[in-house]
Length: 177
Image (tube, rainbow, N blue to C red; front, top):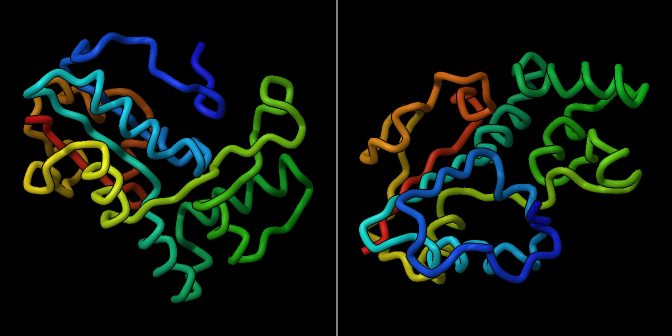
């Protein structure tokens, strides 16, 4: 098991991966480890390989928050979970805040005070991290659910996953050249 809160290196050799699919992973990485993970993904990806990153679409959540949309499905789900799990009535802002930072729903595994979301991205910030890691900007693109240049990712949508929730996910794909 790899603990993304404390790792220093991915356990793979340079250029070992044909592709990397990271659906709703990067938001769980602490901000002080973020660039390291991007760098490590670049290191283990073979030349010509693709990486697909799917993260919460915080810009979309902010837009829905600013509209006061209490019926935004993501916010409704978070409010229901807060009532059921924490016995709390979330405000609209608390629903938005969970895109950036949230409690872990696995206290027995991660500890009582562990965080789930510890990070957030917009497309420009993803590009910044990817460029710093070594990806060329013209090989980084914003894309959509099930829209890919890599056949390795054609499975997207076949399994129930947050990646399928295209109304609240941001999709980014890049190729190492």
